Length: 451
Image 1 (cartoon, rainbow, N blue to C red):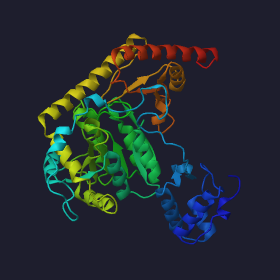
Image 2: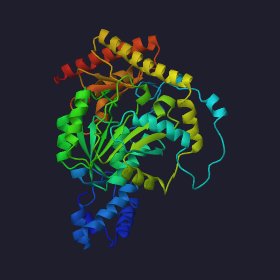
Image 3: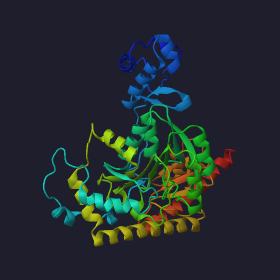
Image 4: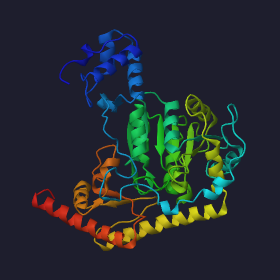
């Protein structure tokens, strides 16, 4: 906006300032994308403590009214749809950008549902079902160095990460995120009003220099995917994990959150950033990839202080995840037939992705498969141009720059594809169409003198 907005905003308390900003937005004086005054300027103009202005912006951020962009300032939130995983609404194109698991390999819960109910659970009872707690403790302890751990059950991994960040951070605190990054993590950090600090990812996972630079910038939390990183498919190597733990040794109170979303489906070993002496940490494992997205449950193992704070974040809202859902998860993950099916599903995803990467390579677009549900395919030309060409051929794909936090020339030349549910004929056609789209995009750029 061209005028000084500090002259329009009024209020002496945080609540009054926040209410006044809301009123300006409602009557159209502030539009989506418009910047708000810097906190210090606003506080000086209103004659209030800086913390009052900070609290007002925090209230607005928590309500989704504004978003913070770090040094870019605070802006009125854009109400347009945020990029997210899942099927594209109202598209006639064949969608290979979903990030969804294959419904044909999600276990049928019918048999487990028939015998899992038991007695009703009432207010004041333990929030974790005892049977699930015993199983989950064994599951998590097998991969964690710290001896002292506590469990928390949340409504999925995104719920866990959001609450973990909220119990540890305040607005404008810095959070280290992988770059390129899982879309939900980007959204969670932006809505929370935190400042995302990008840490590059290579074939061995989060880079050492990137993490060291983020810590030097004062990040208070690190969110990492130890295997099957989305979108790249990278997994931490043993060497890289050891190097990252060494960097973190000097920062034991930085909250390290590991999102092991692919867990039981992964073909890679689990390697952790969390050393035995680290003081603030959490390992989150959701069941959504192997039991289905509608099974909204995640297990979080953490240090006791983080667990207590996380429990406090749950108390005003959901308080606990349904014990019926907890018992259903336990019945499924302890059924030998289901666990065999989950293992077979992991092999299914790996084999289908490997086969499609081979198809692309044979078509003249070299590609290789990492771990996870998706493929991260390098393009010799900008991925946006390729995606436009593919739309003309009936395909909907996702360009890599949607996952980028910083200016990322490499991500802008990547496609993320979800192809594991294609039959052989459709997979052949998509590989041929991608190769043709690359050629067409390259020809257009050459004609324009841009390549």
